[in-house]
Image (cartoon, rainbow, N blue to C red; front, side, top):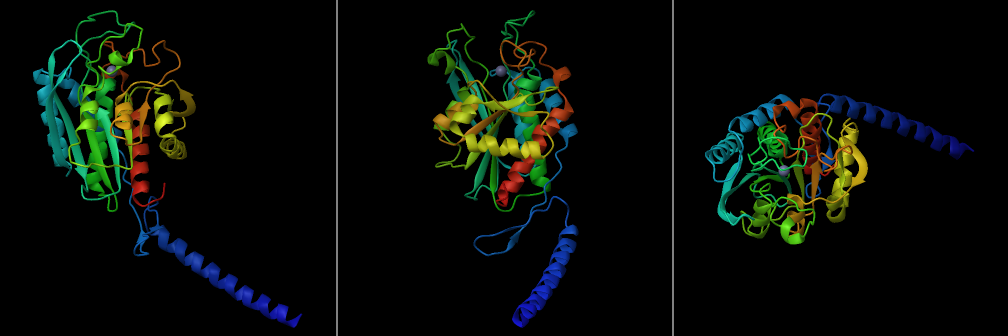
Amino acid sequence: MKAFAFFEKINMNTKTLFFIFTALLIIQFSACTSADSPNEDQDTGATLTVNIPEFNPDNAYNYIQKQVAFGPRVPNTPAHDSCAQWMADQFRSFGARVIVQEDQVKAYTGEMLNMKNIIASYNPDRNRRVLLCAHWDSRHIADSRLATERTKEPILGADDGGSGVGVLLEVARCLKESPLKYMGVDIVLFDVEDYGQPSDGGGYPEQLDTWCLGSQYWSKNFHVAGYKADYGILLDMVGSKGARFTKEGSSMEYAPNIVNKVWKEAINSGYSGYFYNDQTQKIIDDHVYVNRLAKIPTIDIINRPSSTESGFGAYWHTHNDNMEVIDKNTLKAVGQTVINVIYKESIGEL
Ligand SMILES: [Zn+2]
């Protein structure tokens, strides 16, 4: 009985000490920004913190507008050359190491296309890396079944091409503003994604492989020998008003755990109006080749509305894919999610 009272007394004191300690911790962490997240370095035991930057959708919007102002970014055109130069310069101004991978690839038409994959690297010496990618070319024809005019002319591709690049340029700006300490990031802009053979409804693999020529090339010829990344996130058509990002079938086949953690982060960040837990049909996009050929588990964040026959926005592969479809709220939802994912990942908090 007495002994019990003694231990209870000790226990009270421990509780009191614990309370004071906790209160001190709260005071200490309140002094940091709310986005600071502590973790422990497994080698040194030091506390890791990260300052998560704010993704600015106005910047992303302007970067899309700038691309569209060059005109359609179709290989073998002056607009394509000028835009490539501009994007490489932008990444350099955001402190990245930039490599432009150039070669010729053969289109389904037999034409040889001048391909430029643009690779912007942060912390290139770090072993832990995340790959972020998008395609930057725009389609050479408007061949959607919904297209009603100028079907033989190239499209502006504000969403299909422009939006992924716009978001990743703003991510690059954030990486300059708040450099990652413990992880590397590579932003790869694939060329010649959208010069594929128009569908005859058959969907033969030979026909599907006429798409995504830039990512197929990169996946077989990395920009640096022995390139590795822990996982990849592809952004394609991530800027339209009311976009609906579902768990796409190929992403779920190759990298379900990455899909689930990115979607969880998006929903926890308040973007459940854009990121849906429904799983949708597999599509062919650059991530399929990065998974198959480069063996890097890679997911696709892509707009999959339920209301159209194609499963893509009604503007897709038509001349309506212009700045009018772009919405800053969508850009923010995707961009901030990507930022939250990479900064939290960098300190092992995801
Ligand atoms: Zn396309």
